[in-house]
Length: 320
Image (cartoon, rainbow, N blue to C red; front, side):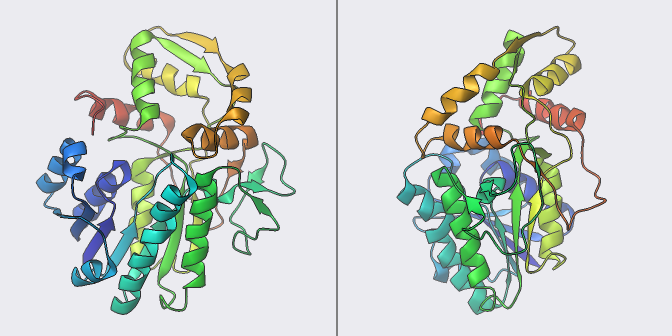
């Protein structure tokens, strides 16, 4: 069985590739030319796993179709940039993948974001949010950043093409990814704060999930377990950012100082819609507890494992 990861040269892609290879899958990672220069460690790690890395000037339906994949995972995602930039990443390029998958009769797993849920009318901040029955109805879901808006548009595209895809599709909505290969800005900051022994306390729980838990759900989706469903993939642990730093301090045998910074959350309202802060502010302001009807009883890696696995990988630095 051939699994194609579109936009797989990233934090989630390298972890999904690892899980798939361990389960005997042949994996092809598709990216844009130049990605290997920006992410040399990831590219090298993928090739060491035996992954076929294909880099193109442009990713088109015909090129994807030529790969003959049984499963296609759409992992392209951006959290910064104007509306058109983010729409191309979450919708425009996705249309090329839908065309290829439809012609092949393959399965599509679209990795979205809990941000696609946005603000749910009738659910107060701190409330519980399960997967909605009517998919992202604009009467119930309000979006405040370009990331939220365009991720929701990508999800709606998948659902609207459900018949064209033969029902062989699934949408995965991860929370904040934690674990190995966490090179994103928030984890570079996390590593710096560990070095400084400072633990900023936001006064809000973060919707975190171990990146390997997401990878395992993605593998199950490729087996058809969740066909026609959208899943909130978030662990039951909602640590404050200070809790994550303090756990890192404990594992490194450091003493760290807790500094309250909850007052800074109000500044998020000033963030432009295309900035990463706009999404962060929205999630922290809503402070929802994201639950899944379809993943009940699942065992999730805990915060100790999340931090341990990140720190183990970060011994070699936090560059990709």
